[in-house]
Length: 125
Image 1 (spheres, rainbow, N blue to C red):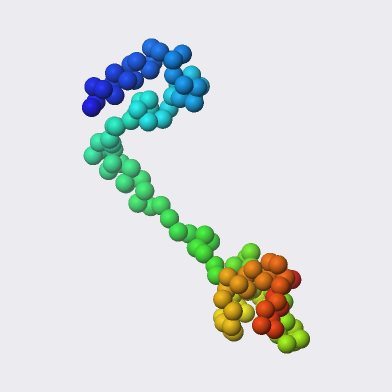
Image 2 (cartoon, one colour):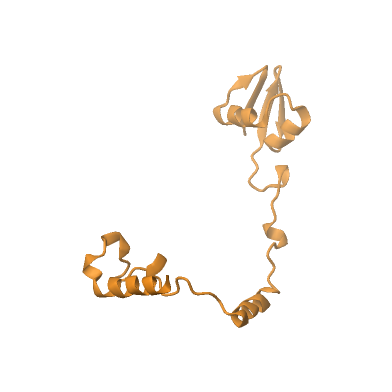
């Protein structure tokens, strides 16, 4: 298998003009079998070195953790009208958690289109 790949690489280098246009990148293909590192593996020594450098990485810093509901900085305030009584919620999830009369996906659609259903009208403020 390795001999075949090497033959293909050698042939492609000597027949650059015969390669399809999408197989060229700056005059040399960089993907798949044309990549000079194709099929090669890291040595155990290299794996240990990479592992030792990644030990002190902080993969989930506190400022990058997900925020839900009104804790989310991008949450939109919502004005909900139920039987001509208007209430304002910090976000759509707060309203959904309180009433759960209509599925959340439907509430989201209603807020985007400013529609009403079952005597409930929802719109973003």
